[in-house]
Length: 258
Image (cartoon, rainbow, N blue to C red; front, side, top):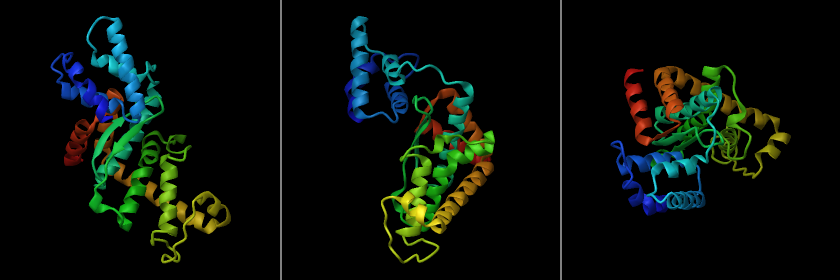
């Protein structure tokens, strides 16, 4: 995404208006574009340039933003709130456990919510880190459970979903990372946890127990930081996309008062 940003930065800077600097505009576009591939960005920029040429004018940042959004209709408010609470839950728990920076949040992707987070390299590979990761991955579901009293399938459904990643992580803790509750020194890799669970219900129960504990821990964190959690969800609901600075401002200020 860096190269497309640099390639049209000068064009966008000429159209910056209403006290919006080029840097602010580019951060906004980058946040909107979370989850897109480099090829997606190149196509969007080409289409925006073509639109500007047809209009015999300079390219505007709105052209890029419209291209990123793909002229999607507004989400129904109930679904928009669900996405906002879900992604805010991930962000609050990620920050509370000091896993690393929250780079941005987006609920305007057309395919649900999206969060971009970083991780402190110095904190990885310990049992505590893996347990913190499990809590962060389960935090979106915890947020829905806490606020909406019922959960959606948004945390699961695909191989790269929150539930899939958390399940694989808990499976590895039991089987390959030396953190298992039974025979922790045995290294027992397997590419398909589902196949193992089908013939080893006791292992499935232990993995599920880890996920259940992580979910409960995430709920406790969100309850403890409820003002911050609700403030971030409200801001995300209204803005639909928030960059690192906007997210950190709420997380930091909320933690001082909550």
